[in-house]
Image (cartoon, rainbow, N blue to C red; front, side, top):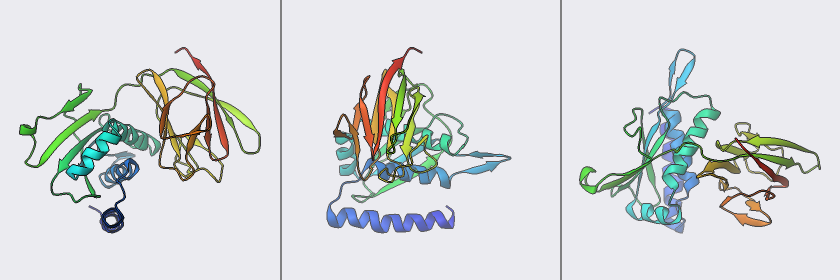
Length: 252
C-alpha cells in the first residue's frame, strides 16, 4: 500500500469507525463505495500509456452491519460493482473484466468499520449471483458475490432545465450516469445546491432508475424526496435548483 493510501486509511478508521461506535451512526452504502474506489486507486498499475486497475473486490464487514445493510439495501453488492465500473470508466482506467463485489461477514471487523481487498482475476464469468456455501468460506466469513448485469433499460430523452431558465436535451441509454458538480460526472451541473456527486441514473431489469448518492439537499422526483426510484415518462427530477424532465422513452 502506498504511503498516502496508508495515511488515508488511518484517518478513515479513526473518524468513521469511532463516530459510528460513539454516536451509533449507520454505515452507509456511499462510505463503502468510496472505499471500493480507494481500493481501486491503490491497486492501479501503469502499462505503457494505460492504467490498469483491479476488478474484483471483497468488502469485509461486521456481521451485524452486513445483516443490516442487506436488509436495507438488498442490491448493495450489485450497486457497488456498478459504481466501480462507472468510476473506472470516468477515470479512463482499464479493467480485465467487469467488476465484481463480494460482501463478506467477518468477525474480525468492528461495528461501523469495513475493509476492502482488491484482486484482478475473475472467478465468476457467467454467474449473475452466487452465494458461497458457509462450508466453503473461511471460518467466521460468509460471502455473497454479485456480477454487474448487462444493461437492460430503454433509451430515454431528458431535458435539463437550469436555474437561469435555459435548457437542453440529452439522451441516456441505461449505462450508469452520475450527476453532480464535480467534473468527473457524466452530467456536470453548474448549480451551487447540487453536491459534487449528487445522484446516478442507471438501467436495471428493463427500467431507468435514479439513485441518490448521499447528497446534501437530496434528490426529488415529482416533489417527493427519494433514495432510489424507477422513472416514467413525464417524471420531473429535481437536484438542487436544476430540473431534469423525462420527456420520452425511445425504442432501441
